[in-house]
Length: 296
Ligand SMILES: [Zn+2]
Image (cartoon, rainbow, N blue to C red; front, side, top):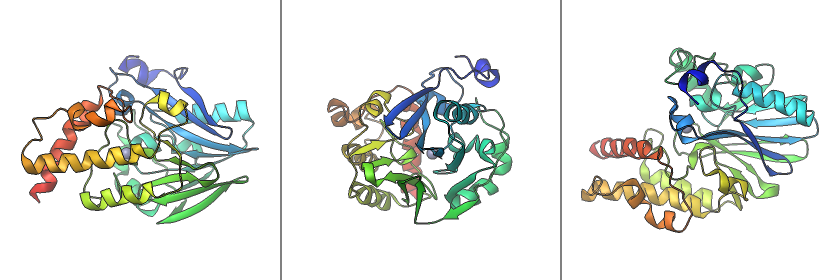
């Protein structure tokens, strides 16, 4: 798909609705190596929990039209009449179509609402490959932990100090399932040390790994793994180990001597992680972030 098509076409037949469980779908927008939007190059999507006539969207996709596509699909194919939207964090590939759900309750962390409001003008300008979109703020905010229900399905929203201020993940305890959004990425995740120190984020991964979960799904990951029951807790340990190794390499001066693949070679060999070339740029950004962090 060319960039021109991505910004003009209203046909989204490349989006796949992947069933992860009887009440859980992953709407996957695929991987588009030539796309101007980094999130389209990495690949990603959004989750929908549904029961009866109700659905809870966990994020609402990346480009104009994506969120509408999901809403139309759920209405048409599953008879959904009531939607609730959860924004896991304020990054554009999670909030771009909030306006499609402006008649619904939109739930997010208090910091997510604040950051969306503070960054409204830059978000509304769009970014490479992402056309401008109107910012619609969450209407129900919390910090720490919130339980919501989709019919009889409990969805626990948990805050973790990983990747971004106010980042929440969704846990379906009845199915031992965690929807991690951007706290976990395959093969490597985007660092930010404004949210918390490296040590704190590693401890947060340990807290996540202590949860009673067996099926882990991420927004940006290997779709074949997601299709077949998701990731195990090894995925959490792999993302934590990547951070620890990057810090260690920056301290001992070997950061530029190892490629991204070498940094995670054990996990790639074990098929815990899966290489995708577009993540080389994420790794390069992470090297800069780590260097800046250690200078402070
Ligand atoms: Zn993010």
